[in-house]
Amino acid sequence: MTEPDQDELKRRVARAALDHVTEDINPESVVGVGTGSTVNFFIDMLVEIKDSFKATISSSIASTSRLKDHGITVLETHKVCSADVYVDGADEVDGSRALIKGGGGALTQEKIVTSMSKHFVCIVDESKLVDRLGAFPLPIEVIPSARTVVKQFARSIGGDPHVRTGLTENGNIIVDVGGLTIDDPGCLEQTINNLPGVVTVGLFVAHRPDLVLIAKRDGSVASL
Ligand code: 5RP
Image 1 (spheres, rainbow, N blue to C red):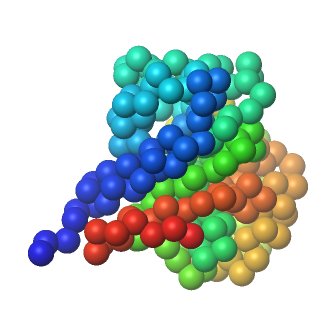
Image 2 (image 1 turned 30 degrees about the vertical axis):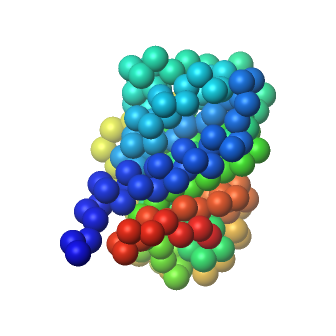
């Protein structure tokens, strides 16, 4: 039997997330929607149940436009107090469900929506599972004038910082920090968040997912 390719894994885990969302929603529900290629499969399926909830809030312009293309209502985040459920991908997941996110650059809005959501379901394929976070370069959204001091800090903890090309949707830059071995992600999240000029670090520990769904190459979907 041939193994499913990566898109098929993303499709399967998106389907499993849709089943969870179906249990969490009612006609008044707001559904939080993340960003990325895995979430795109989820958005394309969400249309199947679009009459079973009130609206969505979205973590990026790209997801907003995909949702709207499907005729799904997207509310402005600041007009909403909470979401019943949030579905998003990740770049790395460890065994305690701590995440690195922000490969797609949407980390700040993703963290805002995560913080507003009663139930965070993270969807990944098994290539994202790690024993220790840090092989994926850690994204940090930074106000441009703070870039030098944030890069200095990154070097002081053994990292190799690079400024990503382009600006975020908030008009800031992203510093990607490679070469890290993150032993205490919760502590590092707090430390980086406290640096002046840092908007968001792509460590999701304080707001880690309640459930991680993992599509495996053997065709199953596991839960963490
Ligand atoms: C975007 C993210 C994404 O969730 C993360 O990059 C995973 O994306 P993909 O599903 O395409 O692998 O954090 O900022």
